[in-house]
Image 1 (tube, rainbow, N blue to C red):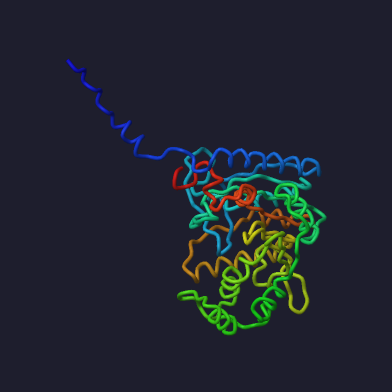
Image 2: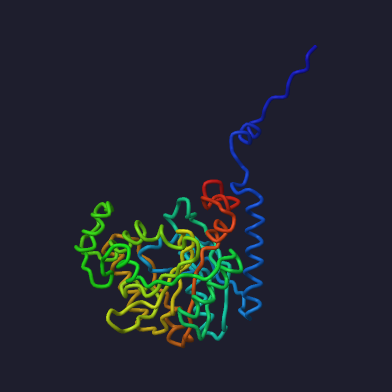
Length: 336
């Protein structure tokens, strides 16, 4: 008599049908862990304090280009509606105002609507703040960090205006929206339904579509002095043209970090937040609350400082030679 074979359970069938394994090879995860050790040693040697701040909070970024995720927490003392933070910036500035001194964090963050080879909705940011630094001094330190983690050499530094003049033959600070749209058209770029009066839409399209892929080839490239309309949380420097004291750094065509000489004026910051909220309403974007605690911290006094957020997942991609972010994440959103 032949023994009956045991029936396959439903659980066994599911286990065979679902890929439960991590998307990143273990060698990449080990390299990622080594990078975190290197980062912590880098800042510890410089006397920069590691901190932790909340992922859940009552307010969030008003930035038009960031989609915050709203959730509801049932817990004693917690407000009903909370937001997953798109970066630790708002809370780290409250620590700075409280007298923390130089601080850094390897922080988890969540951004809705972000997916692709360089994006996962849940991400890790390396963010740090340096009292007494402006954005140029912070660029020096970012360059040193890249040398320590990626083995890169001396970086190239170019102003935003110079890039547009050199690569597209247009004055990024003075050209009107129709002129920028015409340049985009000649470059074969278009945005369906883009309002022609929105200069920044065309500037960002030209930057991402024609300039960014050329940056950081062979050595890091810092781009600084952005248009005043793209200041975000950076200070403005008066002049002709006025510019935002911010920078971005690119390595092998990948945007890796975004830094600011931080705005410390509470009234000006509130005005920018309110302008963002008005523009959100105009565009039909979700309403988000104003961060009154941050404004109170700025009113108390934020030290003169510069800060930068660096995409740690992208840093791991560059360190391992990965072509997609899922190759350096154990479980990206599709497998989470």
